[in-house]
Image 1 (spheres, rainbow, N blue to C red):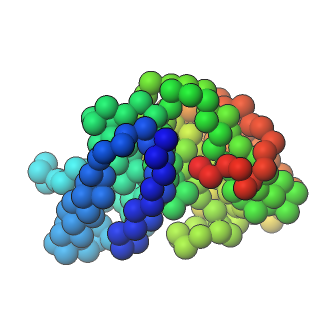
Image 2 (cartoon, rainbow, N blue to C red):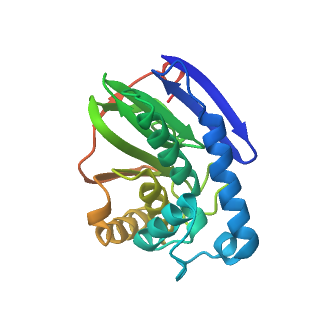
Length: 238
């Protein structure tokens, strides 16, 4: 497996792939250029915290992916940007023949794997630390593993979760849903936070496979998740 890092503006990709030759950097550059050019024409796409009503049928692929995902996740389009770039990057690698690639973009992951893979869960939780991981069995189709936090990272979150991780077929939708559900990890008590988040998650059942919520001393799951195993955080890079 080949390991690479690709940094373009706000996009910071960590890549592991079975391909020895590809031009993913150029692919990502094109996606970012299309997005930036569209934002120049429609600044609301950048600023809105709610889904937009876009009528234009000739949207660039990155814009269309983010827009459709934001409608399903009930968030602003930019809440889906990292997952969308991961998703479209993996699409590119699959088209080039990859059977085993992991694209991680700021904690939002798109992967396809023909061998068992460990995916670390980084919440900085005071009890769990960063010592657990999902054990992902081999699969032939893309999987998204996306995380939002009210305590880690620079993304906007109105909740106080250590982490909300959403697993689903679309990394772009999973990214939006992680934000949407993390926003509702709030309340007067720690139990209220979890309850509110789970109630929100129930409304989006059709768009994900499973969700893991970590908040203070509480852990909650909904749907179907991969096996969670204990691991050394320094041995799990993605």
